[in-house]
Length: 250
Ligand code: ARG
Image 1: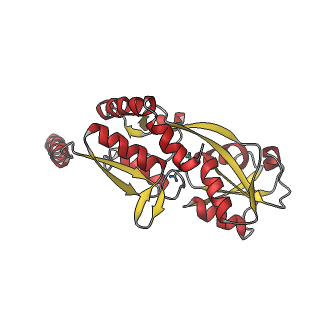
Image 2: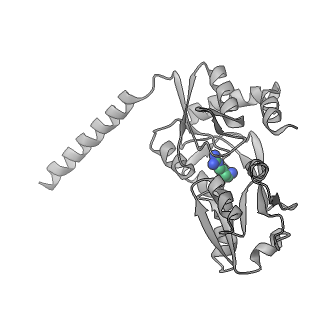
Image 3: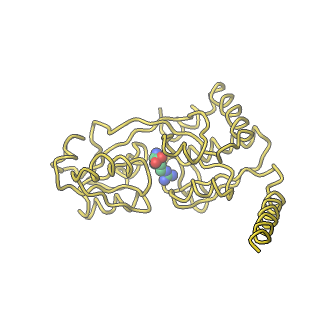
């Protein structure tokens, strides 16, 4: 009986693998997962997702002769969508970290980011060192590196409380209404949020610097290599710099 169940399990598994292969894209479509709450990397203009990542991805797809399809999802859903094969790659101002490298492979880096601290203009917090003063509530976008650093560096040792929001904009709204004392988020979205909300400012010292890259399923070296080659050409011919300048104004 045990043997029969084992054999049946194997048959079911093989059928599953075959079905998975059959459903795979023809190679014509490049499905990118992102979280379009992150200006200027990805955000909505009307019902279209635009931004640095969207444009670089379009240029990559163009080079590869593929049709780009962008799927918007929660930031913490991107890596699971990659590992389960729902999307071909994740591009979301995503920082390369050792923890993420355990579940996905990354492309070469195409941009750098900085974790910035947003406070109210009249805040008593004047430097990153003040974050560990004790008793502060820090707003972050859930599962981002801002969340991870604040959790490890400040919440775990009992130095601060971290409030996690689905969207960076929600964390900033919580700061506006005084529910949190500051928000830790990537520098460029921070600038966009501060511009949209009078009374806020970014601390002159940043928390940390990081590399953004595209994430693929572990072992999908075929796509990883193709994208890296396209990326290399787009960096060499100035396309990437031009796209970044267009949004960040270098
Ligand atoms: N760079 C940070 C990270 O990798 C934040 C990225 C958030 N991106 C987004 N599209 N919401 O965790």
